[in-house]
Length: 140
Image: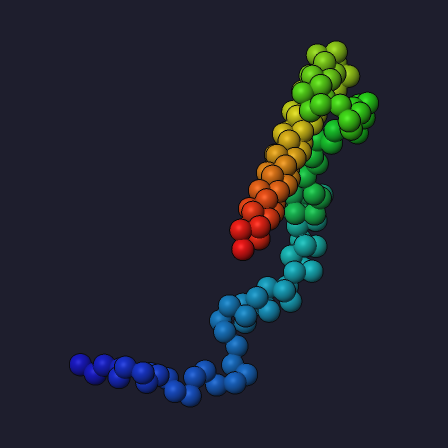
């Protein structure tokens, strides 16, 4: 049984230039027929074919998504995060915002808390490194 030699291509010339793959040839045939296919689908849908109507609607009209209205709450930037969180929970309890809006706001506050925490840690590390560097310079 013949085997390929390691490091040598079994088809050194490769596929001749200009030849189309079967997938590309099929795609071109389908694309050429799309206008007629769509016309037939529309005719079938108008004739009462619910599958054709469904296919047209699903492909041509984007799915409607629930859209929440924008809300604003007066949450002072200088207020502690816990106070802001409590204000959000009160707004949910009072019905001024939906539970999902409240959850999104609390999640945003949690992200902000994490950012603040990281920023404070970076500042503390920088201060410790500066103090260590100053001590090192004093000794030498």
